[in-house]
Amino acid sequence: MHRAGSPATAGGCRWHQQRRDGHRQPAMTRLSRAAVGVPPIDDITTDTDNPPAFVAVIKLREAEDSNPSTYADAETAALQKRGYPDLASLSLALAPDETFPIALATAKKMSWTIVEADPTTRRIEASEHSFWMGFTDDIVVRVAAVDSGSRIDVRSASRHGRSDLGVNAARIGTYLAALREAEKPGN
Image (cartoon, rainbow, N blue to C red; front, side, top):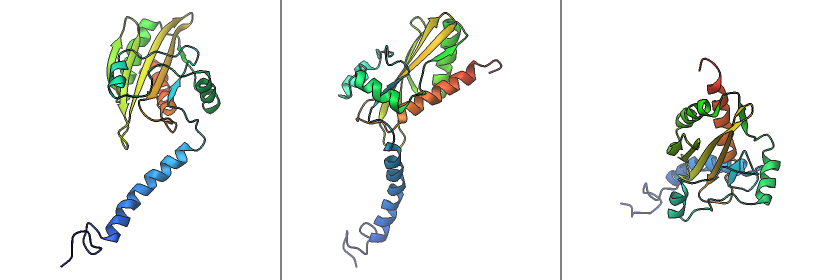
């Protein structure tokens, strides 16, 4: 007979513990590798001069005592520009009132939780929970009128933590690529 927690019981068996820890190791290794080469920031935007502002998610962020809802500072913008030099606004040849429904449909396909979608201001606010760690990131999409049609800017910010390991920039890039594809005729 074995005591609970002794090496011969399932709960204390070294083999089970090593096996359990072995499943965690690849995830931790991926996180460590992801941290290399990305700036230590948690708030990414396509427009560092005039980032889309959070409105609807502010109370959700405050309820969790999260990172600030306002965009950081010039140092963060400089780090972002060095880390993600290709991240930029998307211009479409469609009028903003035509672009907004496509932007919203694309956001819904991203499996984001839509918090607010305002066709008057052409602003979409959403949240997404990470699968592995359960962290929440907030997203705001702004569709603005420009001479050539529409300009879409996106901001994605982590509620907690100091570095997002590149997740927010990847999310923005994926969304803009999907939006570019959805805007094509026949889609």
